[in-house]
Every structure is written in C-alpha cells, then in structure tokens.
Image 1 (tube, helix red, strand yellow):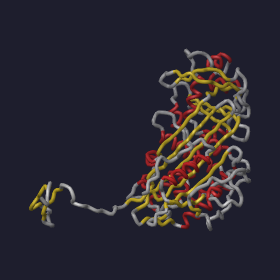
Image 2 (tube, one colour):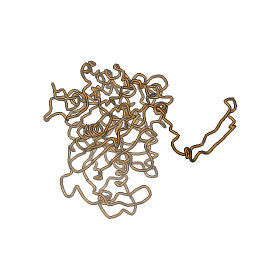
Image 3 (cartoon, helix red, strand yellow):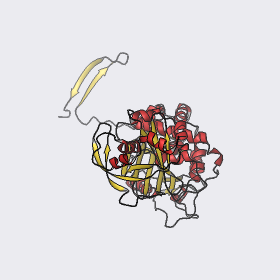
Image 4 (tube, one colour):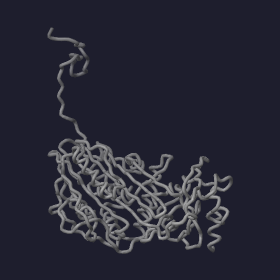
Length: 470
C-alpha cells in the first residue's frame, strides 16, 4: 500500500478535507474532529507510548549526589541537577535502606511492553464512565507494584493477575524501563510515607525492597496537616507544578501512603509555528454536538491501520511520539477501544509507515482525577480493598486491626499545544487499619434498658429511661 492509498484509507487526506477541518461546522464528512476524539479517548498514548517504544540508554530523576534529604533518594539514578532538595519535616528512614539491586536491562522485552500496554487498555476501559478519561499506566503500575511487594495469599494472587506479572518481575521491568528513559523528557519518583503510630509495625524487608527496586524515599511522620502539606508539596515538585495536590485529606487512621509521580515534557520535532498551521476549527462529538477548537495542521511521521480504525504518529524531538487512533466510519470509539489488546496495539504502533500525509491535531488540555478502587476491583483484585480479606502482612501489621487499601488516588494532566506536550501523573495508594475501636459508653442521657435471660434473650423487663435522680 503506497502513501496515498494509506492516507485515503485513514480519511481521504486531500486538500478539500484539510480545508474542511478548518472551516465552519462540517456538513458531511467529519474526519478530523474524530481524530480529536480518538486523541482524547486514547490520551494515554503519552503515558503508554514510551512503554511501547523501547528506550535508548539514559537516566531519569532529580537526584543530587551526597544529599541527605529523603526526597533525594526517591528517583531513579540520574546526573546531578541544580537547586536544593525539597524541605520536608518527615523523618528520614533511608539510613541502611539504600538501593542495592542494579537494574536488569534484560527485562526490556517485547513481552513486558505488551503486558504493560494491555494493563493500560484494561484500566482505561475500567475507568470509562462515558466522558474523557486520562490515565498513566506506568504510574499506576509503579504504585501498585510497590504495594504488591507486601501482598500475600489471595491478595497477592489477585494483584499478580491484574498487573500481569508477579511483583518481583514487574519491579525489575519498571526499574530497568525507568532508567532507560531520556531524563530530559521524563522524570519518575517513588516514595513511601509511614504514619508514626506505635500500633503499626512496618516490615523492614518491605521497605528495603521498595528502596532496592523502586529507589523509593522512605518518610516517617505523624499523619497530620503538616504531613499532608508535605505529601502534596512532594507531588507538586515531582510533577513540575502540574499536579500540585494529590491528597485532599490525610486520615489519622491511615498507616501508610505509597506514591509514584511521573512528569513528561517535550517539544515537537516539527512544531506548529505559522498562522497557516494554527487555525480555528470544529470538534464534533459522537452525538453530533459541535465545539469550536483550535486545530494544528502539519506533517505526520507515521500512519497505521487496524481492523476497526486507523492512526498516526507525530514525533517529539527526543525519541518519544504522540499517537492517536481514529475509528472507522460507523465504528464508535468505545468499539475501537474494546477491540484492542496490548500486543495488537504495540504491533500497530511499531508497524507505522512513514508517508507524506498531514494531520489536523486539536490543541487541548485534559485532566483526570479518580479513585481507582472501583476500576481495580472490577479488573479482579477485590481482596486488597476488603478489610476482612486483605492480606498485606508482608507490608506490616497494626495492633489496631487488619491493614487494607482504602484508596488508590490517580491524578493526571495532559497539555497538547503548538510547541509540544506536557503531561504528569501522581498515583497514591493509601492503607488503613480495620478493627474494633476502644469503646466507652456512658448512660448520661435518655436510654432504653431491659432484663433478658441469657438463653433466649427474651426481655423480662423493658424500660425507656428519660429522667433519673429527680
């Protein structure tokens, strides 16, 4: 198939269609607005495409060698950076917990990339409630991978099935992949916050594994308003200000919070610089509603076709690309998403053909803010959220009751503009304990009382007491 035939299959990319994309509301064909819909529905491309592309050797993070702040140990190894460490009041528990396990580049296989893509697609479908959805599969996998190191029994089995690999294999892959990324475009950081509660006993092996595998900074502090500010400041700092807050509250009953932060910033290889390339256009929803948008016209770097849709690649200047898929005529974006597997998506992206085609890309910003508890439960790991069934004894134990995941918070932001793209994600896994609180009951206001036999609990006497001592 030559370039023109491929372009025709994608959407008849002739001058009339390009002009139509920039004109007043289209009357017949609505090709380029659908690309916008596909770009929004598959906005995970920014988070997912780096996982699929395979990386050239590089380093990421913001570590300053020799620094003692716990925030300096929460990113994968990187060259020195300028600026002081983020000040935190939390205690530094990294003494004796420095990472000891080197990354294994041998885990950067096509199979691991496909498994990661497949997890992302399954999570995207599970999070779909009919509106825009934006997730970072890498961020969620990292936070849950850290969590799974402390799971045991049924909880571990369910998490392994949902994540696609056992915790050790997943951690080895994520560590190697993180260190392979271009540190100028991507930064990744992980952290563990522990509540300084004498009733909670963290497993040292769990902390060591997170330091080894995820280079996680270990922090200990009372779970109060000051620590809430610290955690949110950490999230804002590690996402370059794109996500300034991940937690709205920090419950005193919480015993641990595991965090991953991911930031992406890159310029287009061929930015949109002229007035001819940036014009007013129209985005049309599946129900026919029309929106005025800014459209960006330029050369694409690759096109690909699948059974239910076609797609494009547009390169950034440092080894990353933006990818989007447009459903075929008569196919909804939901049907397109349902048809994809991780292996198929990876094959489509890697098989993209270079052609001299053009693409109209909308300028847009997306934000996501979700508790993934419902989605992850539907995907097959309900035990982790069940106070009675959760088994995180490998993480630690609490004298106050069983430890379980109370929330998996995921915030994301994506900005696609003329110069390039910015994106960020933070995932927080919060643990609480479940138990019977210490009770104190004072009959110092009106009450009911009774006398019952202890065999059948039949009330022999029953009283409503409104006033005594008069």
